[in-house]
Amino acid sequence: MALKRGIVELVPFDDNWAQEYEQEEKLLKEVLKDYILEIHHVGSTSIKGLCAKPVIDILVVIKSLKDIPKIEDILKNYDYENRGPQGVEDRMFFAKGPEDARTHYLHFTEKGSKTYYDQIIFKKYLIEHPEYIQKYADLKKELAKLYKDERPKYTKGKNDFITEVIKKGWEEYDKGNIS
Image (tube, rainbow, N blue to C red; front, side):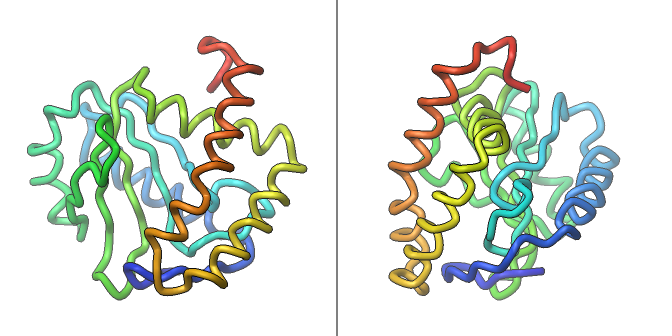
């Protein structure tokens, strides 16, 4: 399980991804202790049956993004690199592993942020509407063929679908019924 930075490689769903997440969750809870309010396995590796890049995405909900410098100091010891917000203003993104073998992505955000709700709603909606899992898989495979070495274009190609699913999720769920 690992992926070179900047490329797109999709693999079939792997039941071991849940264990990989659980191991990393345990580590993060041990080393970040009081900073973490919630932690969630998100992204395609968290959705049974969905093909994915072989990198575990983790949503880490913290009290304040102002704590990121302290968190960064801790995570440096565990092979994490702070990659900044990456164009998402209410999130800080960390990657684990060398550039030729990324294994985990951390998405730090605050409770109630747009990133928080978007991540939770997207996963919940896909799980509860399996027909969208197949639509998403088909789109990802098509984009992976077109943009194998162009991750930004691959990611941008998924935006309309993701936005549509999140919108449908907002229509179906209220904030008190999301997690």
